[in-house]
Length: 416
Image (cartoon, rainbow, N blue to C red; front, side):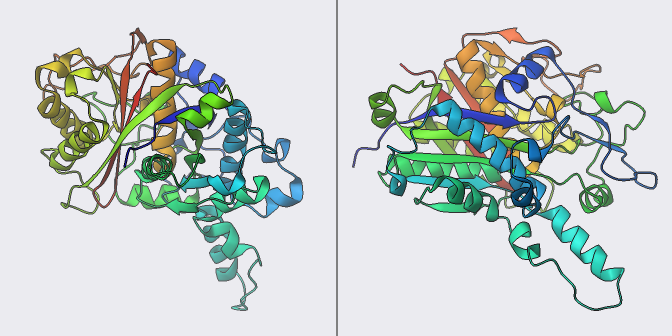
């Protein structure tokens, strides 16, 4: 059967550097860092005392107070970002066939704060199990798409993909395939995460995964820099409306880009460390190129996973050089995590939005905080260091990788 074409018609972003997709894009172009001392809890005894929190965000500015109280922060974020994306797509909710509209969402952890608070409250009590009746429905990772569909009456496929930091990229690939195969006309996809909590920070610190650059939080996320010492935890959500091309065209929708391919692979190597030679990363990019039916030389821009970890950054760049050969040095490579921090399960969504907007505006956002050259990295690669670069981006790739060796890759193309 002939696969249907899939396009992007709506975007919504709630990030540490901007609470709308336009604010997010402006923050990216300005090279704005979202890292700052944590305000959610006392960090005196924590190794890392900073993160990329949302700024000036109040859920009740967008949600009914009673409804907001029934939601963990990761679901609140999903509701706000998806509402923006739906509005941006100008979907007529009265006219659309809601049986053909789905919600496929990504979350690496889900309601971590809810779980943490309920267990701590129980531990502080007399042993009587007095749990909030909303404990379970607030915590479970699948509740975000459930709430989105309930609000809008979307009756198509509805579930969450959980593959650590690749979760929202997995969600987008599933959404792409459901529309390609004719099962849906429209899917709300993306991801959200709210792990800046006592448990989240403590757990990642115990793994030695986080930067401890407490004296200078705003410069702590420094992908590809020789002095990088770990990632910076972020929070927020990204939402993308994927739509069948003819369906979008018939209603006169604005089209940001076409989604031309998705790839998946596994490192099959280690619980948390990437394969040092980037074998799984090579496989996922090749799978994505094959799925899209394009040559490596057609790719103009790669938004890397680029977490600012000593092992991960080098392995990914090695893989890019291997897959793209001599063309690798002609690609604008960047890591927007240098500004947003690492949003875990939401990373793939907000980084895909950055790649899509790079196509729309002809500008590639920078990799900020680069100061010291890492001699293990090929100096001929254009890492878009410290300043945005103008570029006619016809094809953009977004990479995301997760603990457990999960790799996902998505390709976007300027509409012909």
